[in-house]
Image 1 (cartoon, rainbow, N blue to C red):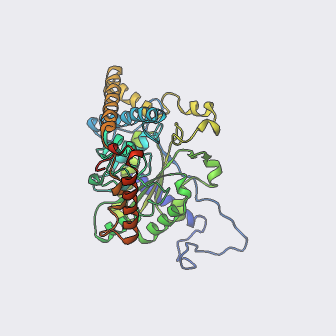
Image 2 (image 1 turned 135 degrees about the horizontal axis):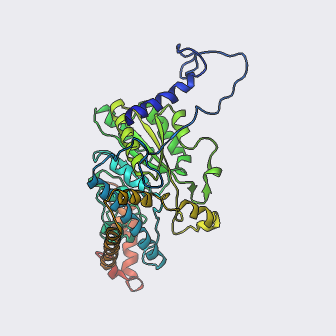
Image 3 (image 1 turned 120 degrees about the vertical axis):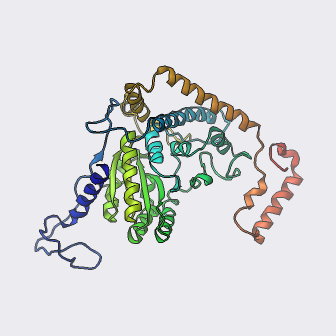
Length: 420
């Protein structure tokens, strides 16, 4: 039973602090778990091994005793979201190189971490995403047109052109907007999770972030807040090996991100992030524990960032082709592994694959064509949606901007902007 295994794993790590004492007496000091004195200096480094949950091999076959945890309908839908994410990535990355959008960030190699975790959550769970969760967004209903409109910053963009490309949002599906400032969203989630706890709600707040963002002070503050107040929050870290150009070997010493959960007495699990079954079951168990015990959970998904960090990055400057190719062997990447499973189960074939990829390509190209015909948002909206009544200093800037536009209309292509 997965929930039993998760609780057993949790208990093992919690008991680690008492290992070797031979007793379970009251702690010696407030705020610590020490129950005995020693006469010789002892230095501790870890709390034991964090095992990695894996339920499907790289051959696409479930490991012994493992069954598919969702319906075939959901399995196909999850696979379609993963493939769409990949196809959209290729098209939008190329469009950025053509100068049709200003910036892009691919999800290559991390499609299972995003999609399967998103599928394991409930719709009422409030999500704070980072910027590599396109699969989760697609699962919750984001379509190709909204993806393109956001990346173009046109009048169809929910953020009204005020955010960077890939900074999606789905307010009607309980997904907050992607934050441009790394890590700041992590500290917001446990506040909501604490409110859910106080209100007795069976829902949780979810914060996605990468191993790099985990080094920000906001992440540690969030973990501490959630731990002390027992906030109903799931922290999902995608450990993809790199924080832009900085490998994990130069980011931190210690046992990954999971060890930080143990340090804050947060139930923690480490998962093979390229295994759809493991990600789904692990996050499902994490959510169950979170809402039933009203306490936070940390999930570390071990994956690999195949593409560049963004279109502003050139990863060949800091890693070799041999390294990347070694991670792309058939079955190691999440889409390949899940496809092998579906094909082995008779639910997928080359013809369906070609049809899906062709359809996804048409979707994104049609969205781009439509997006390029839309007007850009009105510049006035830079000053709205923050205050009920615009303060004087913003009003001055607003008026100065419009005066500048009126006096220089011949220097700008104002026909591209709505309301100008």
